[in-house]
Length: 511
View 1: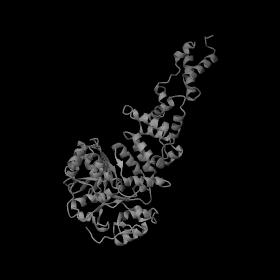
View 2: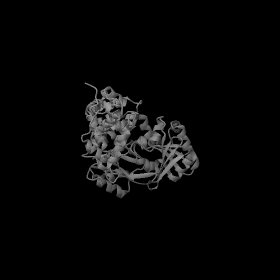
View 3: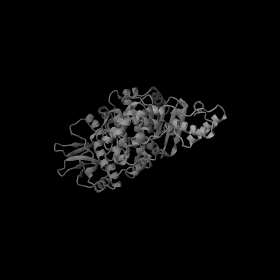
View 4: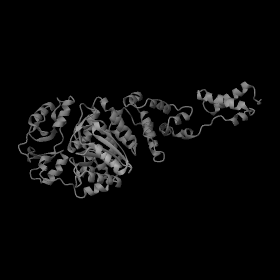
């Protein structure tokens, strides 16, 4: 450990603490109370964000993380485990609770990192055969490069849930070159985004591969789009949302290894979602919804720090407009989940559904969404069908549509949900999403929606007493034109019009 630890008083402001850390060149410092006891650790990157967001006058204690601590007599194995919990910085305390030293990843570099026994085999076993073929081919083609499987693919493989989507981070390998190699080897197509140093390959194996140069990012203001620049794997993982999504599986250079700098594997075993830094949800509110989706699908829970951040987000006066595009994406991903209702209920319980979207999950809206979900998998409800039902619970549907850039026709669909049209064909013509939402909201009218509509036929005119001949076709055409103009609706009105036309032509044989 490093002795002679310098600390920050809890009474200092964020701006004062940042100046002190910049002056000393520290990336993080322990925070102490009046008696000198360590009460937390604050990182410079969090203070920089706080000052950038206009929160520099707040006490430094409001931006610190709980201190992960060790005793001087603890062994290196305990220190390695503690580093993952402490984000790479662990305070060593004396018997009085004061800082006796500090232990960082730099100290750990003296010994080689090791994964828990069997974890690489477990991870590889959790990948599909096609994904293993892709990873092995890349490792053989680029033995001198650094290629990592990252994010949700690693998480899901460790959970034993194979995914056809692959996210790769590259160092020393061009994403475009790797994408071209994969399509030559396995067939398929690829695209390149040179400005962002990313590429995508759709392989004939049925696998989608995203490739990106290692990056880091910062947010100029809460909710704004991040500024991205090339970096290292360590900083690429540091920019992610939760520890379980900040693991990487190194496939090149050999040997393969799990890289887990934030204790994601342990959180995975505990089924916990733990954010990587104290301002995570303020920076990007869509991370809350991503966490809610994961919690609902994987039966995970938020840890205490995440719960605190959710409360802080709920207390904000308003959510930045800049976050709208990512919030829209997360909402539509939620509606595509196996159980959208479970995720919606969780979002509602945390107050995020109303805070972030102005939506309420109550009464007939919740009941209709439950009915819609119950028809899986026979008819596969469209995500848009869930959206239309959720719109029924919107505080201001028009403002919702405008803010999240949904088509304005959704407002017309909403009106048809509230006030059913006279003809079911209007629902069917709008597409399956509207009909699914309508039947979920009005289950008693399902047969009406899907029953073929009865229109006037020549046989009906003969039964009215019209003689066979050209006049039959003429009256049918006139009734059809009236239907198109909206002057008649339904078979009964068509029949009434036909009677009038027959009478007007003086050809009826009826008394």
